[in-house]
Image 1 (tube, one colour):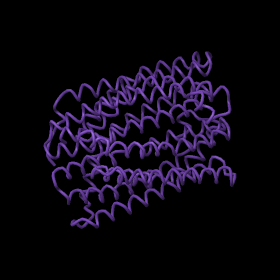
Image 2: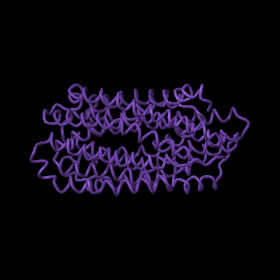
Image 3: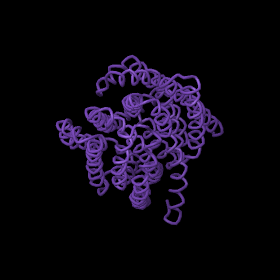
Image 4: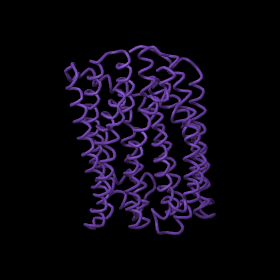
Length: 443
């Protein structure tokens, strides 16, 4: 990672990753836009089901993060055999975990949605969507594993191509099934699930074609599968803490009424889109950090980190400004309810203000993941969760008072609380990055 080529290396990884990551939340954006015009209960139900589904899949994000860090370090150290085996072992583990998770989520769909506060018509729509979407979890986890392996070998273009094709297929299927066949919210779930399996199949094919061209013959290592699972435990803890924050936020939103809950679904979908966009730098951070530490290039890692942090803050400020002023144009895309629209516009202003913090946090999170600093990240995110609990408690205790002030005020209060979470998270990551304990070199 020499300084003259540093910018080119970052851009070569981050630009394709940006478009690929943006395509992923566009699945949910397409669902939200289509389902939102079916009615407010359907949109609120999608919000609850989407939170459960994102949590079920997000718990296993270590499949991508772990693969990127392991493969990138092996690449930097010149261990081609480990590159090949890590990709295969991770894919098998993803398939097994995906099937088990799909069974649990599918059978427990109604209870899981009810726990988040959904009831009546909202609960019915949420359950329908979640039961069908659960079938796509094996494909979602396999996509994570293969995407992580490809990022580790510095390939972010292939996931981009597959993501764009998948989003296009998803949009066409959703429109056809929801409106063409009149399947309602169930059609949206079926369309997204089918697209996920198409994408997973494409990525698996690309990975194994790529490895057949190498001199190393891919073989499944049961011990490697077990090691991948064990090494992923700290990242699971980290992810569970993060998902607990998101679920607690949805729980508070449900206590504020259907309109704030529906508005929160739209605002959170937009926030997720922005998060994936900014996460492109985090992906570059994972790949470059892992490769650099594998090659014992500590100075290069420090230089790349400083550059990407600056880009994260500036990028967050730019896209945050765009979102803050785009609310009147975005809100009508998701709902015809004037109350929902007003709440969405107000929420997006708060979302925009918090984007520089988000850019900073996402970059440092990616760098530390690429360094394999999973244990600290697990403990650090647990501390962040504990710091967020008083904010959640305050909002929940005052839910009736906030609801009485109207959906706009209630939604703004909710998102100010969520911005406080991002501030706490940023402080924790900064404390770790300033030290040297995470800069461990070698394969």
